[in-house]
Image (cartoon, rainbow, N blue to C red; front, side, top):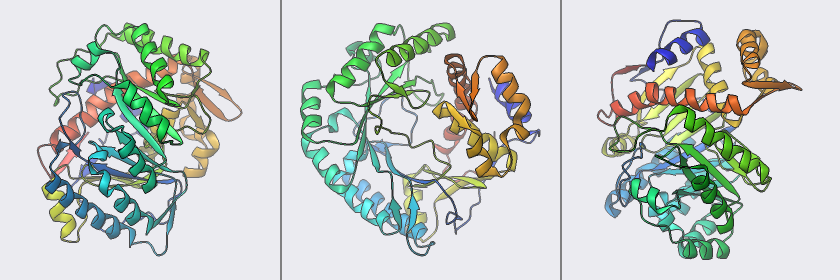
Length: 417
């Protein structure tokens, strides 16, 4: 598995050197000139810990949550004050954890960000199904949240049981969503669960749109080594058949595909914190991507609060990109949208895409992974599956290793991937 990703990395970056993350960082972040800059805020608290979830989270306590958010707001001002005036950004997303556990302070966080940034494409926030109540939604809407993403995983009881979740009260959810309106209501599902069928997933999608969703995300189950999940992964052939069949079903219903895993029923409905050229991350485990570097904050909440309260950024590790490394990162996450525009690549890097990756693009077309039309490379169904297949390798070879170490060490000295 790591051999495949290492070989791909060496070929595409034209070097045998690994991706090297070091225990260093810039106290002044060069984000002022970044275009298409997004914002992300991490709230790491949950009422209970799902055994399949790999993200940075701890059990909720009000005292710790308030102390953490005090530090989070200090970090926002610490970074925001580095840029005179207000910087225009695309969007703001809250992830977790369960951000709604801090619903009474979401408005305060948004106010702090609004002091330094002009958010042009809306504010999104992740919700646990238990948090989808009229009271919570009304507070979020009043605070400025325009998009919500509800982590359903599955409406089917057999999968709720496997995932350690309880049955979703769909009547209560529909009533709340009918009462408080958002531009985007997205619902997340996991596919490739044991013995999951096309009918299982189709029923989930149908129910989501019936309840008020105008956007769905269907993420593959990935078995991280540091989670306690007992779930076994679905074989490759079955997984491809399931992904292809559910994609065809969504397209037959008139839904548009906005990324490998997402479909929407209304043109303005979108929800993605990933497809940004650059972004600033706030909170423990949050990542920041700038033109020439990628950094990640410590996963440890106490260490995060201590660093921020001392007036220092809570950066744990930083990689400073070579030009080829930055190109691969850009291409990988831009391709998540299923399309790559050659003008966008040249605008960002100053060189034509074909000049850098002519052979690779030719191979991708030859294998039937992409088609090319009017300067845009678009993934086929086959290409989308193999993107997913490689992302699985990438996740287990790189992200799994990095997050596994950072869950144990607040500030590792160095990680090579």
